[in-house]
Amino acid sequence: MKKYYFLCSLPRAGNTLLGSILNQSKDIRLTANSILPEIIYQLHLIKKDQLFTNFPDYKSYDNVINNVFNNYYQEWNVNNIISRGTWGTPANLQLLKSIIKKPKFIILYRPVLKCLASFIKIEKPLDVELRCNQLLEKEDIIGKSLWSMQNIIKNKEDHIVINYKDLVNNTNNTLKKIFNYLEVNFENIDINNIKQFSTNSISYDDSVLPFNLHTIRTNKIEFNKYDIKDYLPSNIIKKYSNLDIWKY
Image 1 (cartoon, helix red, strand yellow):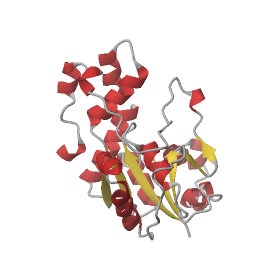
Image 2: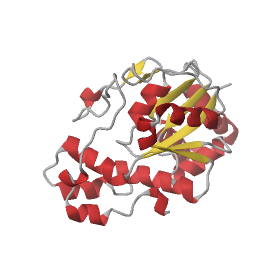
Image 3: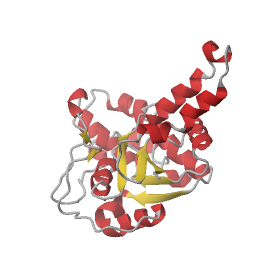
Image 4: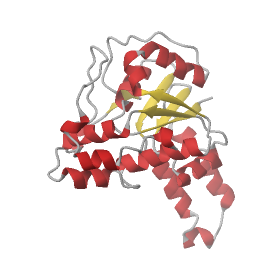
């Protein structure tokens, strides 16, 4: 029987690296940024549609929603699947817990300003301040992810926190922490010969994006060192200096 766990993190926080490492395991797979939260939300909206309310077949609907994970991951030949997404936002969390009563979360943490600077470093927007503010809006990519993480912690959901710094500096101990949390026997993983991220025989196609966001170094694990002051204006650093999840 498959078991499902949930990764909530900021983009540019080491998700691709973590997935590339974990997916060497025989019995764990970490997904790409999943479409499942949106699928589940859209299924939820159907219940409010007149077509459903006119003929409210709840039992048939529940058959679909309660089997959405098993159906989606039917062809994945592992027992433990970590689904990455903004599962912790209030709406997503409520819908998730209607399907999986006691979900377990992994929070991959990297300082918000580091992730923000990484985006700006890649995108090189003409108006850096405007783009930073956009990225941190509640429904944009960084803001929504941050909201998700904060809500998990605020509601005291079952979770562990993995620090990106520890993933880089103490990779094996960090992996043992994850395996232990999932109650899976630890496997030795070759961290000096990592492959580009893929799962279920599918890889990212970044040609559909304006930027390459998912290519990692495969010969070693190390920090890509940069100073946030080289990419973020001082007023942005000051404005968002208190956003890290430990404040909540």
